[in-house]
Length: 285
Image 1 (cartoon, helix red, strand yellow):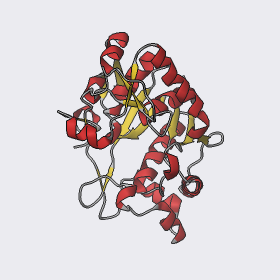
Image 2: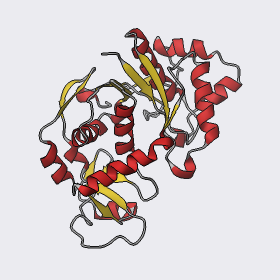
Image 3: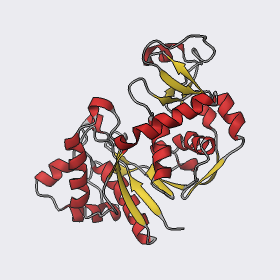
């Protein structure tokens, strides 16, 4: 089977070195195996998704010396597919409407999961007819019963037993969008024929949910490759929200993008950055 990887940035801010590393891993893995490398712009995050960030991301990748196969894919062109998938789950009784806010979930949660406070099921058995915007949550117990035991394979961590119950009843359609990250990325990876999902180790646990969704929709099952993260001087992963230095600024300053990419490949990092160590199970240590 031909290897197909992808890099899928969200255009809600400029790319930084962490994004560069993730794109390089996906690009080099595909090229080393004679496969294809795709770019998908995940632009369904409402007003936060901006066209100028999407265009800048493509310019950043070219500056790094990366090439991709075919035109960049726009996730916003697939919102009808995401919505149809939710309707399918509604018809099968596998999702339910939820009007709870983030603050209400945090206040009522009794445990913390990989994504934060685990939804306690407030609306799961509520008999109400939605009259305004609602989120649609996966009925985890029913979904698990439908799918049965599942496994998935990470190229660095090996065979994994899927445990999506860690997340509770996850949101699959947000109040402001027809598909959540979990739903959209699962459907889009299948639509794009991705055979190896490369992404940071911080998303390792999310794969448990994605494997369940693949089973519910009878989608092909790829392998995964969760790579180490770039950490700043505080030991935190690089992030747009904390103002990590952007690739755009480096380009503007005249830095050599190809040389930067080669340095990252060789593990030669700026003095204030380190690579995370992968613990058992592929998670960050």
